[in-house]
Amino acid sequence: MRHGYHMGYGFWGSDILILILIIFAVLVFILLRNNKTENPFREDLMDILKEKYAIGIISADEYIERKSIIENMKYSNLYITILLKRYALCEVNTKEFFNIKNEIEGINIDNITKERLVKGELSYNEFKFRKGSEV
Image: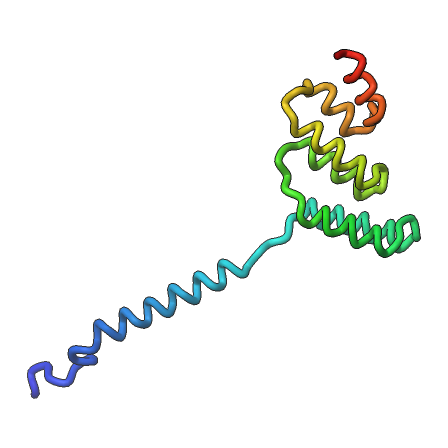
């Protein structure tokens, strides 16, 4: 019997184990970083938009514009999600979408008016007229 000589990796055993752990940690980090799950709400909006494009309601340029806006939009509040759905349904154009978005992100409007504006119960032009007459 050699009393434990030549067992394991000798002096390099712990170094190899540390190297293996570092490689494993890097692989886990890369896999988790690249594993982006799609937002189901965004997927629903994209399906609606694709349907509108297939029917011919919107042109290819408008489809690309609306798609990029929907994909890059941050959901800062619930009103934005309602407005995005109306935008995907082609109920509002891009200019009106951004005008309404800027207004509802402001602090000068009460929640009832925001909700009416986002749902389309109050048009943006009517809102601006009322806001202008209050001043």
